[in-house]
Image (cartoon, rainbow, N blue to C red; front, side):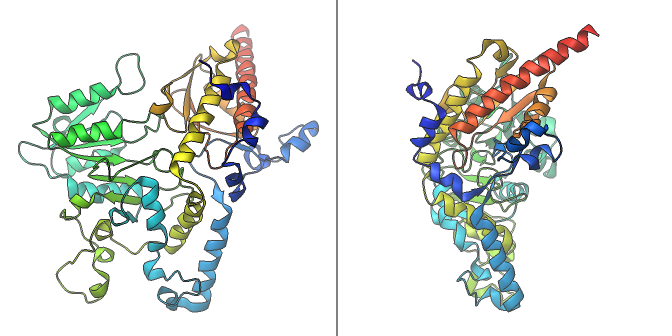
Length: 446
């Protein structure tokens, strides 16, 4: 049955959107910043002065307006007070406790207790630190289960412990002819290797296809077999509803520059379940209890919870960039954001498939079931036209991204994207495909 939303105009949908005011909290790139000055025809001058259609929050989120003010405030405190900003801060954000300004809201976003979350480091470094704590290989149990073609950081710990990739890594691939992983296949691999597996490490949302994994089900299955499980939430945090504490996840890591809008290279975060907080770990001075942190004693006394896994004092500027975004998140909740996200991607899918002349040139490889995907549709193009389509979209002031081979990823983000954005993208995509196909056919005739 067709969704009744799809019978409404984008203007009507935007008018009824309970989150529409949040778009005003962000800075939207101008079209000229995307296509470059001088690339528009004279008749397109008015169009070129408009905002770009930004559908790339899965790669880099937009800048919240609050962020610039917060950063400038910290620069001013540094200029005026120097080292005294660590303890006597005119804005009540002493640098010595700067991470406390973001931990509570961050815990809400990931569904963890305050004590289970720490904002620190970067995604890759955090992953290494937590794998050092949780990957404890033995002679009989040393294997790591992960998806095929995972990032190198996901499997380098096995090599660090002296195992070869062929011996220690068990990779899961989609079934022939498929692009996404089947949950039953994941559970079967875990079951078949239950006696030799030390760790399961999977993404919450797969970066290429946008597939949302059944995290609760997979976590429960692994833990019932005595296997530690961790999640890479780079594309899931701020995107989908997470309940890491209730799901009994052992650990998780994430970055914050995608759906959390903290800026390029922004600060990362970790989750360590309260039942696992006493794990041995690589220690850092910022994880030492505050009362004796500067005593420089030889015994490490960890702060209880995830904070005890911290290493260095966090970047103040990077932390307040995240603070600027989390203040927007605090105006709503993940359930409301997820509801709008499902509607946006559903509306986009509906529009993309209504034109049989252009839709035959691509395949949506993201799961069609809204509960199995995040705020992303990945379009796999045929006949080698992806690059041409991407260029034409860019010249139309539309920001998406591409991944080889032949995929354009489109991410309508509920914090700042509108139904009108989605509608206009679908029109421009159809125009870009028609032009690319016509150009391709003309070149074949030459």
